[in-house]
Structure formats: structure tokens, C-alpha cells
Image 1 (cartoon, rainbow, N blue to C red):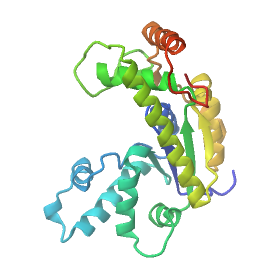
Image 2 (cartoon, rainbow, N blue to C red; image 1 turned 90 degrees about the vertical axis):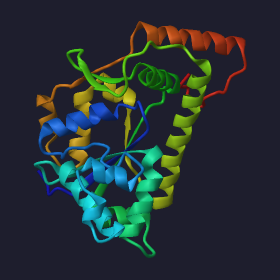
Image 3 (cartoon, rainbow, N blue to C red; image 1 turned 30 degrees about the vertical axis):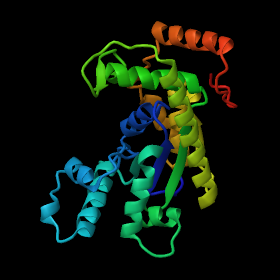
Length: 265
């Protein structure tokens, strides 16, 4: 293999785009860090709590912030030399604001990121099926179940079980929000002069190994490592998801609804 060109990578995404699957696949290789939402909570206190740090143990908030970043990098590397990070657009602005505290002065966002994490591969993982994405998110919010393991057992539950209930207005809100958040990522890429590695949910769901190999190759790692990695999560979409889609599309034919130029519903 050629020399590894990156010291970190950042998965830029929005909810229900397949990022948990992608992070799990990369983690399973043992050489691509432990990617996760290491800065998910938009709060310094939340970050400190996540890493078992106490604000009172630091002389200043800036020292506490440095410690939180160091802890995140250590966790995101695991036993590898590569730092993996997933960032949801909803927590990105707060993350950037803290990064500016660490690296003040006339620097671009990209320069600050690379000052913190080294040369970085930027990955944009998105989902063009806005309706499917919205259905997935609404069901997760309502039922509390966000992910299942490949064997069908629960992987991530954030609330006690509740029944899912069709809510057309909530689906429309989620579709609009996801579209706006992906557009915000695109605007930031243009602002920073970035051409990210672009990945699609459909390709990841259809052939996880092929997409994993693509990312490994982009990172300068051996893509053949993808051959030994089994997808660790199961899709949550089922007959109820299809029922909701059919109902939404039927109603769309009866009422005037927001259109999605990407054809997502």
C-alpha cells in the first residue's frame, strides 16, 4: 500500500442516512479508528460528562475544552493511528464555535479541523429518498428504537417502547429539515473549497462491503480488508414503513404537498 495520506476522516451526514452502519463497518476493520459522534451533544458540559471529565478539575474552560478534544481523539482512534469522526449537521455549528476557541485567528474551518486532527478526508453520506428517511426517523423517535443488530436484537434504544403512529405533518417537517441540512453541508463544502468523498445510502444498504472498500481505498488503507467484515446492523424498514409510504404518496395525489427535486417522496 502507498503511504497513508490522512490522519483523520470526518463523516458529514444527517440522521437516518446509514452512518451507524458505515461507522460500525469501519470500526470492525481494526485499522480505521472508532468513528462515532464524539462531539454530538452541543454542550461543553455534555462533552466533559461523556469523557468522564470534571470542569472543576481544570484551571479554565479553555483547558477543559482542550481535554475534551484530546479525549475524543483518543476514543476516535482506538488502537489505530486514524481518527474517525461522525458529525450530524445539527451539532456542527456548536462544534465549529468550540474549534474556533481552540484555534483563534484568521483561519478557515478546514484549517482549524486539520490543526486539530491532521490531514482529513471529508465524506458526505446522504440519502436521496427523503420520504424513506423521514419515515425511518419518525418511527425511531416514536418507538425509541434506533438500530437493530444483524441478528435482529436491539442495538440502540433511546426511549421506552411506544407504538408508531402515522403523522403526515411530522414527515413533511423531517423531509424539509433533512433537505435543508444536506444543503447546508453542500454550502460549507463550497465555502471551504472541499470536494468530499460522496456516498449514498442506497449503495451502502445494497452492498456495504463495496462502499467500505471504497472508503478504505480513499484513506490509503487496504480495501481487501472489507472482505472480512460482516454488516453488523439490520434494516428497520418493514411492512409498516411501506404502508406509511403508500399512504403519504396517496395523500400527495389528493392534496398539494411540498415537492422534492431529488425525487425522495
